[in-house]
Amino acid sequence: MSLIRSLLLVLCMPLIACNHVSKENKTIDNADREYPNIIFVLVDDLGYADVGFNGSNYFETPNLDALAKESLILDNAYMYPTCSPSRTAIFTGKQSFRTGVYTVPVLEKGTAEENIFSRWTVGKEHPIYAEPLAKAGYKSIHIGKYHIVGPYPEKELAMQFPIQQKLTQPEPGDYSWVETHKKPEISQYYPEGRGFVKNVGGTFRGDPAFEKGGYKSEAGGYWAPFSNPFMEKKQGDNWLTDRLTDEAIDFMETYKDGPFLINLNFYGVHRPIKARSQALYEKYMNKPVDSVLGQGIGRNTKFKELGAKYATMVESVDENMQRLITYLDSSGLRENTIIIFTSDNGYHSMASVNNKLRGAKGEIYEGGIKVPMLINWPNKVKSRRSEVAVSGLDVFPTLMDLANVNNYQGQLDGTSLTALFENDDKFLKERPLFWHLASRFKHGTCSVIRKGNYKLIQFLANGKLELYNLKTDQEESNNLIKEEPEIAESLRLELVQWRKDNKVPLPPNSVLSI
Image 1 (spheres, rainbow, N blue to C red):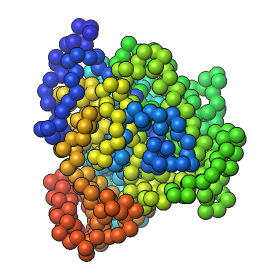
Image 2 (image 1 turned 120 degrees about the vertical axis):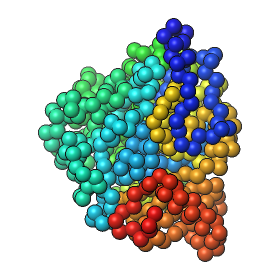
Image 3 (image 1 turned 90 degrees about the vertical axis):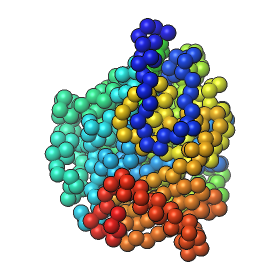
Image 4 (image 1 turned 180 degrees about the vertical axis):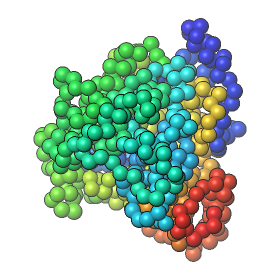
């Protein structure tokens, strides 16, 4: 180990400032190894059961399934129901109410009485994980969807908060914002201003269809020439998911002496839904359906066609995951590289289906927030399936733990998952998870607590409560408020206390006092 790396190891000794930190929480032994390389893969809109290792017989993910057999599969991994708060929570390690990012701003419905309208840009007062990693010696690249900077940050950040109307974005084909975004005043909010060495394709936009016509354009941003103004055109460009993986491999080759962070945020499998190839599309159109989950059936011809195209996009992500693994194996980097694979929210109901879960993207029910997640690190992470509930908020502290960054002083609302690498951890198993949605999209505003097998939803506008036992009723079909009033009241009081302790803001029309 170099002298500089040795000094870094000695200097990074104070305890991490983090909410929900368990005294029993074990950290991995860093004394006898180099810092690990980290590949964090965040797929967009990939549902919990859109992968074979979580039960799909329609979508084909053979490479991920093989990786899952050698990995820790987190069977109760959760995000927010839409991408903006999920990505902000992952990047900052903070609950959405701390950053003011409650949903994708352009999706909000209703008035300023019904909503605390969402922010778009994450201010510099909220560091993202690449910043402390850079100080620890990591070389990091952000690839793909970013979505924590708004299209008009200078106007947005000058507004008095809470704002009185939802934010807007440029129409597809309008590139008037690009020049301004490449100037220091706004580029400071981009990846290269926040700890990353390089940014490929990350902007304010939540999908790749920048060009005129957007979703209705022929390319949809997935086919070259890519319309993303933050991606250079390269010879051989063809399919976006392949190009983003190329960038990851090139960066690893450049910085293979490590440590490095590959922040690979695929735009896939987000809309617009585009078939990877005609052959793959025909394969899925003619493939037997998954009658249990409902995948591949299609409630009508258009939906079946979209589902088949979507399946080709899922398979493309799977193929590119194998490209990463093949590179790690061939370069001798696999042994000291940890891979974390997950999605930013539940499945999109226009492209997929899961009859075993209630709801979809945009909803606080399991179909909207439960996601696939695995952690792979040869000889360091024990392969198994764990039922311990985890959150996107846990990513930041996990990365800090892996990099031995023990002096981070910022607010963190999650907990490092390294204690799960070998066996289930008592603290993590018993801790509650919280959500707070203060703006409307698919349903009314609400706060949520999941603890043990139970999940309590409290709607803010009318105080209505819903209680579900997720162990016996993952479809959330039986509201147990009347059957189990003591459990409901205990969880309600804990949820109210959490809001009180954290000064969680309520929309103006809430009937609740706290």
